[in-house]
Length: 153
Ligand SMILES: [Fe+2]
Ligand SMILES: [Fe+2]
Image (cartoon, rainbow, N blue to C red; front, top):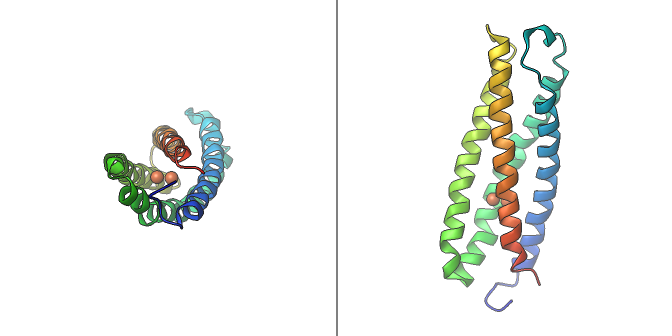
């Protein structure tokens, strides 16, 4: 597409691969969160929490890397080639900071599970913050993918 720098295709391919990897982590996260039950009788089985912990740790690295990658490559290219996309890019950047805050909140609750005095409430908070983040992140990726689809060659 005229106006886009030569590296854009390569950069958008990298972003798409990162989206696939993150989406697969989000599916795993969502499945674990749905397996969490907010009743005190079932806390003998904390295996979904352990799976959540592993998944959360991987995302602690890949998520900020992905946001940085988009903001330093394709977003710059799109804004430069198409100034009318500036508001879309700004909106995606704001979502990055909201999503990072939501994810940090989820990780904070995850860290509290072991030492909580009220495990039932903490598990409910974990489930809610986790599902809120997962759904928002999936929607964010879907928005970017449909935006990027318009620039695919
Ligand atoms: Fe993004
Ligand atoms: Fe993205």
